[in-house]
View 1: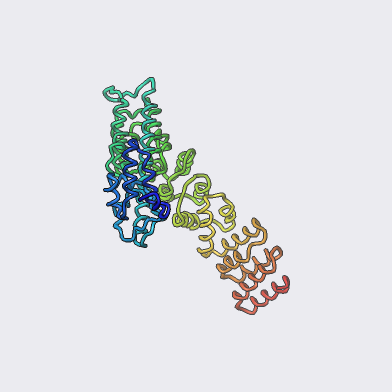
View 2: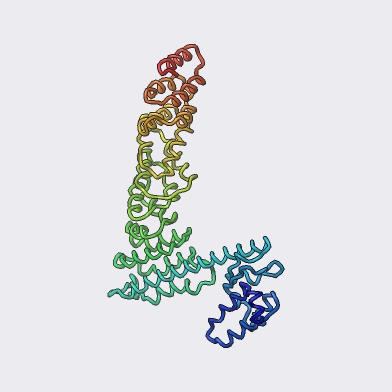
Length: 420
């Protein structure tokens, strides 16, 4: 393209990008390639790469395709090249392909970043271990636990990985079995740091992990294994091992101990609820940190509310500062289980704690009361502190419940008293 033609026909975005390629170690060759591209009369990307004399994938790596019409071009070779395609002229199908490729590339970058962070965590552990004045000695033959052995066990599987996520249950099980000769109280500080690393790596576990842990660690350390499990991230296998170790009577204490420095796996908690009193369950939900989903929160709440506790104790459950999802589920479960006296306590608690209970709360709660006698007694109790719209909600509920002449008379008395 001549200079006079360039004034009339300015370079396209793709040609401008080729100009940027002049930042090459070999400037002469780069400028020659740019000149050939600018003089080319083609929009074929493969042809442009041949004209430039540059490998196609290298040439279009992270290229800005803004303004380039690709609608009649096979774009598959561009998909893995991290091009800036957002401003290109594309068909809908092509744009979907680019977006899918971008998500895949983003996921791959995230995976690589995670692997890099994990490898760095292992390297930091190896550096720490190498700096110790006293190395670990095997409890059997006196063999020294070397940094090279730890590197082979923990780091090499990460840097030589052929899968997206080499930190699997197999990795965990190797880490548990290969360290076994050095499991002793004398080496507890190193073992604790070792388990902290496994926690940082967020290692998964399976049933073999539990067997290996019980065989190599519990048999040697007995209840001191708790300080190792504390170093791990929340895992059902290991947390359940600890919670179930001492029986139902001590589940709460075990969960509290585990939850001093981290959250406890909610599934491990769930499988250890059997046999606990409602007071113990409530304390567990209040004092032990854990994360759970909505369905699991409902199961926790149902497990508590189905216990045989007196209605007058309802306020303790409602007032307890328990896990937020469980706390919300407790309200739903109490209302849904149909114990009218507990429902009445819910309404009283709402009124006491939040001022006048909202009309929607009253309507929802009163819908679970089927006894007119209980409903009218509750209405007269909280009526003096309710607003007009809330009194209207109660009036409608009482009207629906009133069947006999006596019921209707008492209902009328309520209306007269509160001018409804």
